[in-house]
Length: 461
Ligand code: NAD
Image 1 (tube, rainbow, N blue to C red):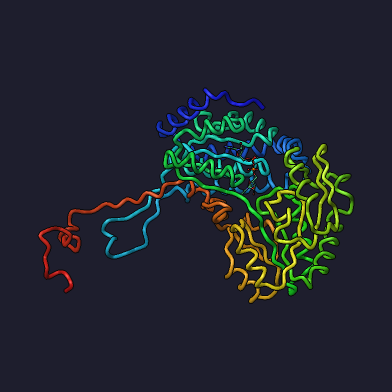
Image 2: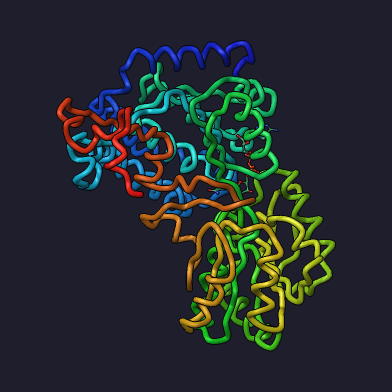
């Protein structure tokens, strides 16, 4: 992948601004045609995207299809099918007072939007927000992650072939290019990635008062109640932990469990792992590898310095980038494995005395993107939800909540904006612009009272 020359970047932006000002993206028919092209872009090239994801992350082809490409196609189809409904003006709820002014809310595109994507879901997290931004009538500058180069290269090749090159442009590069991009006065920025860079993006955006959506990560806890279906819980946790090699923002990061129940949980997790991976994943290739040497070395250091007991796994090969699925028990609050978001196939188990200690443990840390609860007890679920805060909550499952027709996003250190998915994504890139239209006769009715000199008799004493 070649980086976009720095001097080109302002020109790309000016081109997108001119295209927006030309008004071509205002037509809903134009947006729908672009969305249809976006669907073709992905559908025609599924095999090439699978290959790119394999080259970038060693991702198994089936997992790429199931967990990334299919979900992206669904979102693109949804934007295509709903764009007219989403974009149509919304009449205000009936009110006798306001009815004469015909209040409506127009859905206006914001202008030129910037989408910065991460390496871990480099198709979904670029194409889904792109679809929403197009549906909302914006022009778009895309900055894919330089760590998933094969996918970025494929997107750079295909986007101008399928989409209007005046309306969507790709800029490639790393920190120098992104820094240059962030100097420009975008009308909205959507950043998905880590919190350190999230702060850089927010600071740059503040110079232009540009609104920002931040999709960040964090440590997502799984709170386990002994009154749960442990076999199913363990299978869903291990599946969620090992999908994409643990490199998903909503992967369960750690398990928190009453100390007396730890042995049973460990046993169930090991059994679930053996069921999911009857063949060593190093041989089967069914666990995605770490994205690069830096991340492999990072995870190796965290595992090598844990004071917990490694139950399975523990090996990280920084040459082949393979990190073995790892379960670590008796992990304390100050352990290396609790020091940062793991973003790898390593599952620490933290024993606590009871649910109150589990709640306090979660509350002392940054608000996680997701909170997972495994329980069949309604009072337990309510207690944990009522006494914690997280971007989302999923009960008795992992990962699937991202596809639900609800807003998805973080809170506090895990981000803000809740842009995913469907209509919520569309609204992220839309300015809700209310319009009222007052008839002259209004002044002879109630609204005449606004004018001076005020008629004292019409005010309450
Ligand atoms: P990354 O290293 O690919 O970086 C993300 C983007 O930031 C890239 O496009 C990169 O070029 C850019 N970038 C990096 N350094 C920069 C700098 N100094 N200035 C400006 N731009 C810079 O990915 P990452 O950040 O390691 O992604 C993993 C993180 O993303 C995890 O924390 C994960 O939880 C989070 N994530 C969140 C979501 C979500 O929906 N909330 C989804 C996926 C990933």
